[in-house]
Structure formats: structure tokens, C-alpha cells
Length: 257
Ligand code: GRF
Image (tube, rainbow, N blue to C red; front, side, top):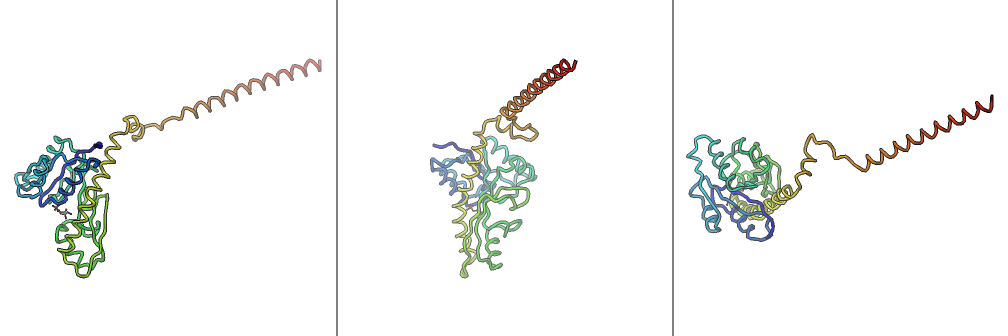
């Protein structure tokens, strides 16, 4: 079994993307394991999937937290307790607070059913996305896995895959084909992020310190040695020349007088 990172999956509904991640984690070579599933809705079907797979799962009901930051603080507590390395939003229908995003900077992934930055942002979710794609007569659409930043749906793309939009497509047919693509690319994107996190973990501490800001550049010991040697020979050559000149002067003086 390979080394793994721990992921926490946040859901609100059906959890078919969660299922794709559960299935991927069954492969012994997949570099991640699901430590925890959190849902803001007790009715989310994804909770059944977690239960069936024997994964810890809890409901954090957003309605019990009038302040968004208190709801996010509760999520944060659960994720930290489960020692999660990477948070995966999989159909999670809550906007996360800037402080939560800062706390997990670069460590939150989301999957979106369009070729971002097209058809993203507020109000662009579920069937709204596919309806907008058809209205705009797009010839292709697809899915995007991206890192979550404070700008809704505008974080850096980790993986994106396009599919054609056919003339006979409806929002429903499109949604189905895009969802198939989501199930392929989410595990791939998670594996990619996991390799990056594992690589950072394996790197020796002093290497990271040497690369840190404000740290002096590692001196090249050989170059210093070479410089010292040439200075020493320059000095010795100088001494020999002075002695030779002095000897010539003495010889001339003796010859003249
Ligand atoms: C997916 O289309 C995903 O792109 C979006 O929400 C939907 C969730 O589906 N963020 P599921 O709950 O994973 O089945």
C-alpha cells in the first residue's frame, strides 16, 4: 500500500462525486484516503454512501449556526481532529468564509460542471449551468477541478476536461454527460494534489529552510576554496617579484660604484 494523504469530503446532496472518490480510494496505489465526510444536510444521500463504505461521517447543520464563521469554525474543528490534509468540496452548497479559505489556503478543491471561468460564479450551479451553456449555443462544455480561493469559482485550475455539446442536447442530457466526466477527473485531480503534498512532506526540513525567503543563498564551498587559492598564489608571485627587483637594484648599485 502506498503512502497516503487524508482527505475530508464536504457534501450537501447525492454524493456521486464522493462515490467516485470512495471507489478511487479502494485502489491500493491511490495516494489518498477519505478520513471524514461532512454534510450540512441530514438528508444528503451521500451520507449513506459514506456509511456503506465505513467512513466517519457527520452532519454539521448550517441552520444551527446563524453566523457563517461559526458554522465554518465547526467544520474546521472536525477536519483538524481528523487530521485532514486536503478538503474536497463535492456538491457542497455553502459558500465558505474568507477566514476558512485562508486557514486552508491551497488545500481546498472544488468541482464545477463547466469549463471555468465560463459559466461560473454566483447562481451558476446545477441545471442553471447547463441551461446557460445551451442558451449560449456553446459547442463544448465540460468540468473543472479548481483550488478554492476567496473569488467564487475563480481559483487556479487543477484539471479540466471538455466534451462536445450536441444540437439535440438538453440541460438534462448535458448534466449526465458532464457528471460522468466529473467522476473521472475528480479522483485524478485529488491524486495530483496528494502527490504534491506527499512530496512536500518527504522533503527534508533543511532543504525547505534553504529555499525559504530571506535565507542566504547556499555558499559554494569549492568556489570559495578556488578563490582563496588564486589569491594565495597571487600574493606569493608578488613576493617573488619584489625580491627579484630588489636583487636587480642591489646588483646595479654594486656594479655602478
Ligand atoms: C456536481 O455537478 C458538481 O459539479 C457540483 O454539484 C454536483 C454534485 O453532484 N458542484 P454530486 O452530489 O457529487 O452527485
